[in-house]
Length: 191
Ligand SMILES: Cc1cc2nc3c(=O)[nH]c(=O)nc-3n(C[C@H](O)[C@H](O)[C@H](O)COP(=O)(O)O)c2cc1C
Image (tube, rainbow, N blue to C red; front, side, top):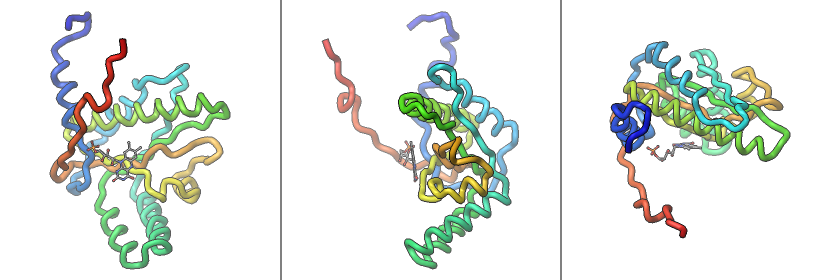
């Protein structure tokens, strides 16, 4: 289809949309700051109703990363036992890149839903931008992301912001296979 935009990148966009996969294992390679900034920059171009730009993005350094790992260990010791908590902590220490994406809270229920939706679009932009640069991401919403102590560690106010995702990123070790249902499972032509 012809439009007044450049048609040259269409196939690249379609390819990235289809081929992006959640990354579960990462090499210990550091990701250049310019690629991180590029991915974070892509968040603000996500659609957002009334241009609320509700996202807040935190790049977590080693100090905060270690505190989150300790907090998660403490949570898991209570629910799954010491051994499982230790294994998880060791795995998390290996993850090179940590970002937290929050959404500004709204007292208006509809605004809150729409702002959350916008933040999710922002995260998808970020993941696709990283993927285009050869960086894999895992979006996580585990128990630690709902623990109020996380806010104290990172330094945000839970009365003002909700966590949308803790994002791990790095050079992916392997690409997981994924299946999806065919389009007729969810696409209906209504007269
Ligand atoms: C809101 C949201 C929360 C997610 N939380 C987790 C999580 O806590 N742990 C996890 O392993 N994956 C999580 N994922 C990633 C999904 O499991 C993943 O996208 C799904 O398996 C499809 O794989 P794909 O991203 O490779 O297409 C989350 C994804 C979304 C959109």
